[in-house]
Length: 173
Image (cartoon, rainbow, N blue to C red):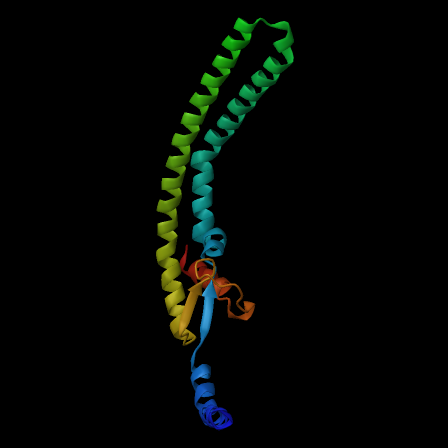
């Protein structure tokens, strides 16, 4: 047993320089694509487009929701003064309003999600080009997407996100 351990240790010591050279040859980096989507010029243009297109609708839904909540609060306050039929009728009206509002909101959410996906695709292509160019320049062996890689820890010094954003922004007019 001691002999096997000694042989294993000797083999490990002889292989150590080779392993060290192999480890030095591997260059790893990562990019936070969510940050690229949010902070790049293309990403900010997309956010502006979404706000312009969906902002007024969002405000409208917020007002309608506040009105329905106010009606529900009024109903709760006035319940002791109302008959069961009146309460039932008001509750039914409120439920119908809430259901209609929810249906409208759901449709707008689906439309928003499609638009976000379309705009994100327009950003992903240039981002991938920037990552590939930067990776070749830095002779990277592997570049991970920070949130998708399942990494529990990675040194911040390996983060290429700011450089990718800078490179994308240089190409964006």
